[in-house]
Length: 257
Image (cartoon, rainbow, N blue to C red; front, side):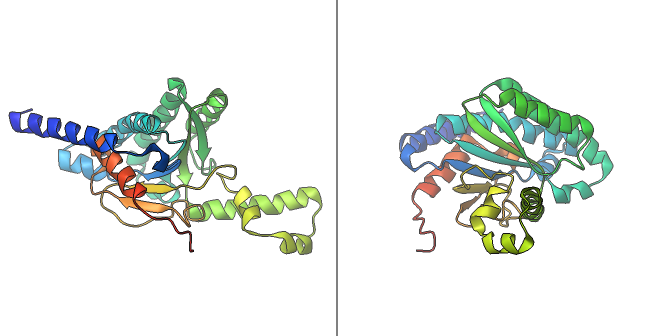
């Protein structure tokens, strides 16, 4: 690292401390969703392989959760793998699933966070399914940040699964279709989502400069604030996180009122 880069790094750290010093913890979002975008583009720009880009993105996760712990965030939803990603080439998917399994097991082993899977298990490799189930069980008692790992997740799929769950629940209770139709409301559907007992996200951060939802938590983000950051996920810094919190704090959330 040359002198110019060293000085730039020091200035960023000083600026981050200044932003953090003015942060009102009462205005910090309690649930943050993160669309961790840009691993492959970061790798290409760095002259690295796609797998190295995914590994770099994975390495950023625990650092990010550490920042969330410092600022009193209670729930974090990390979108690691979408239902659309199943269409990627096998030569990318095989190492990617291994990296995601390492992330899940590492989060559970850390001991600071409670791991919860959101998404479908059916198409995931058996080893990853086992890792998700074991991580949920081993961290169920943890009184730390609830970390939703969105793997095999798609917003439309979640709503379809919620409706299916609601119909099966009615069938088990002997409820007729007419009775169910009379009782369906947004709260009922919400209870059958992957995050049924959780607060909706207050803030959603998407990295890499893309400004779209791509199907992320379509139901839960009806009133969420969004923050789009131009930085690729592996290069996301604490100062970028603090800027997102500062931006969120000055917004006036009207909820349609």
